[in-house]
Length: 67
Image (tube, rainbow, N blue to C red):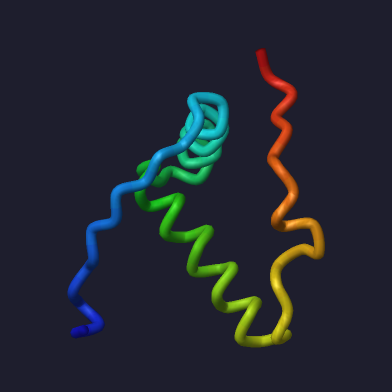
């Protein structure tokens, strides 16, 4: 795949997670899509640098304390 080609990926997020990412994106002056791409890029970069996942508890269910 060409480096300039973007792959579309359907993604389902909980409403709570989406809201958190949307707020973070707004704080960083990015679109939600841009924020998700940025976060994934940073995770991959860290994985390449350290050989480890971002966190040891990455597979734990996310608990957002927002209602």
